[in-house]
Image 1: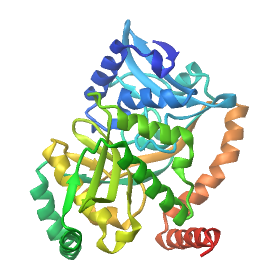
Image 2: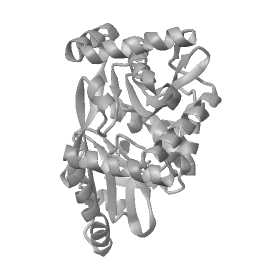
Image 3: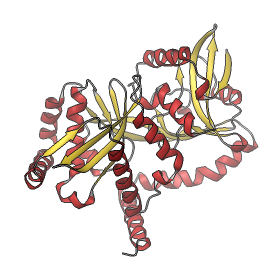
Image 4: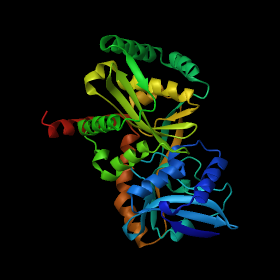
Length: 360
């Protein structure tokens, strides 16, 4: 086996085609974060982005996208915003993860949303988490029927709020794939305000993330990954929006937000129902809501996928230093998030701190 390392921009058309074919051969859900277009987009905003290409018998047998930091510290490409991570390998390909890290000049490789079935790295996982999904492969009517059986009060209340919102504003309108850049800017402003309101770091304050989102929205190219901005309008006013990534069959939910003035109408919940309906009409069978606890996810989901968090290490002093610096904090966070009462207390503390910073 031979391994070469390139920047994403150095991948040619033959590479990306081989990547897609290998990915399809795994039988895993076609999550857009695992498609070559996502790594190409990250490569345009992150100078440290790399892709290891694994060759066997003169043919590309695998692709491993990653980012390399100082002193050989590696991380999943787009770590912090990527919701599905790992290598794209020919089924049955035999390679040791330490060999791969050595070829990439990495002492460590950190992941927080490792895809289930990534046998190369799963032994290094420190914790596993459920990633809620909405299955609409049988059509939206079937999904709504199931939702009515599981959570009749939730569905009835949400649809009633949608009707009331329409009556008070002159009608509700939904656009699944809104191309207006102004709508994206509004969503990002809502989301930034939400981050501040809940005491969390504003992702859009990081230039590379905001640039990545804008690039993915601007790209209308066909392929396994492109940005989709969905907007719920009340009258002519946007009241909720979501930006995610889609492949032919999977919509990865990413950045949802709403206008807090309309909170009493639960526009975010209405938006997700309309997204599920439109996605089913587009031939999408799965909406991946992403890792993380939230009441709306519990209400909407039909099941869960599994993702993992951890670090693969290549024995040495640099790997030991990384472990000492990161693992105790990770374990403490996993301990808290795995206990609902502690997690709720932590969220209340974050919200209280945010209110104090805001002078309220």
